[in-house]
Length: 173
Image 1 (cartoon, rainbow, N blue to C red):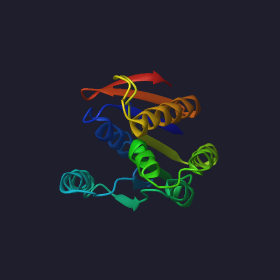
Image 2: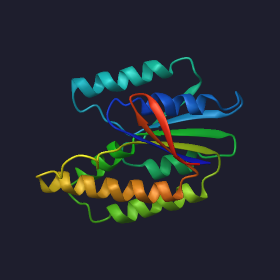
Image 3: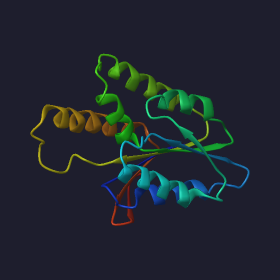
Image 4: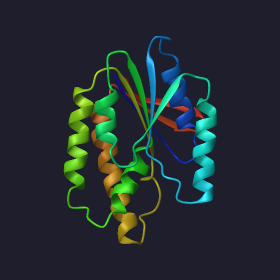
């Protein structure tokens, strides 16, 4: 099963996605694939906060700031539940590279792995397309690429949830 949790920053999407995975039977391996990098103190504090929330709940964490596809491929199994947090950070990591020539190949391989993966996968991502059009080219590219990514994943997903103020609105499934 593939699920997509979308929402704004601090909307509660990560917490609700984690709760969704924790509803799985105890014999399921819970894998948290983290895409964030601690580039500054504030981000390091956010990462530490998320890690603290998962302590004692049987999670195994895999750090995959760029190699998300390989991490899913290596951990997806019939008896696994994977939470990926977050796709927009993963996209940002790729957009900040000097060479973006293979981004579309990376994205397409990601789609293929998701379609073939066994088990339960929950993807968390930031909805950024509801604001004004950004002025800078990198910001516009980010909004465009995240919008395409979200549309493609929503079409693929069995269940899509929009989170606002900690409340779920099921859009699909």
